[in-house]
Length: 99
Image 1 (cartoon, helix red, strand yellow):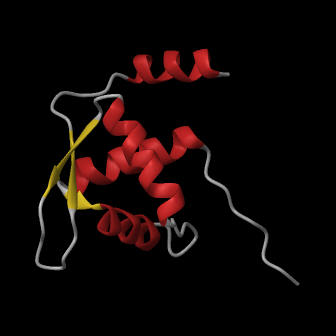
Image 2 (tube, rainbow, N blue to C red):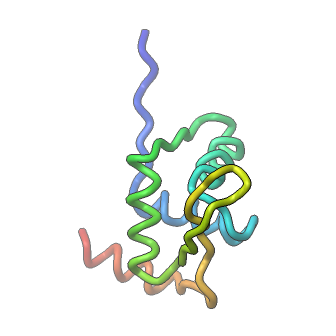
């Protein structure tokens, strides 16, 4: 029997990524994916095709920022939650407008 496919709604992924960055500070995309997988006890396994478009979307909205440069693990970009808080009302109004 095949395992049911688990999908994460777009807004849910945004919130999970924002909370991860708020909790742990700056991380590379791989580190974000690993932490989400760890915290979800392997229920959520994010691939690059899911995570990086989400990170780009959050950066375009000004909710996170990225800094390019090589790290000790040869990762290229490090993502940081933008200063200030993202108001839950602004997120809700954006989601309501997209539906």
